[in-house]
Image (tube, rainbow, N blue to C red; front, side):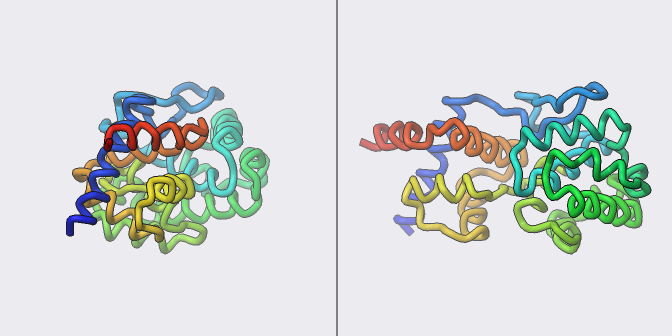
Length: 232
């Protein structure tokens, strides 16, 4: 019990340290003007997103699989210019969808999945209807869609539907390893974060965003040094 308590303390403290290093990240970025790159909104992590922006987040979560966000941005801009950030238009789209998402890689596969997901959402009553499901029920629905795994499903839950679910990715696993935290699997890491930080989509989402930031900036060692210095 004492050991587990110590592990939770490390998670709470590294969360605070990353907040001090980078501030709020304003995830998930969404398009505000047609044809322009998605915009981050620091300080608005708790704000509910519209149904249209929730669908754009779903698109982004699918497109970001196996590629960088910079490539996803290019695809999102293309979709915006072609007026394809629309659930019905994507569900009925032709080859222009493949052309638009080409920068994100695996474009044939991703376009096919976006069409299928769009149709699934429409059949279920659109985004508005999905909001009525309890978190676990909605997670099961998302996971039933082809090509949607735990990381993508939880990204959608946290950022599109503002559910208190922590997203675990490769960066998170690396950070936990650097901190000598004894949790390795997706579920283990997610559960300990849920136990360490009070339930909040804003807090979980921003913690995940800052983990990505420290990893991309290659400053994980710096964060760990700060943590260790405070434990002395």
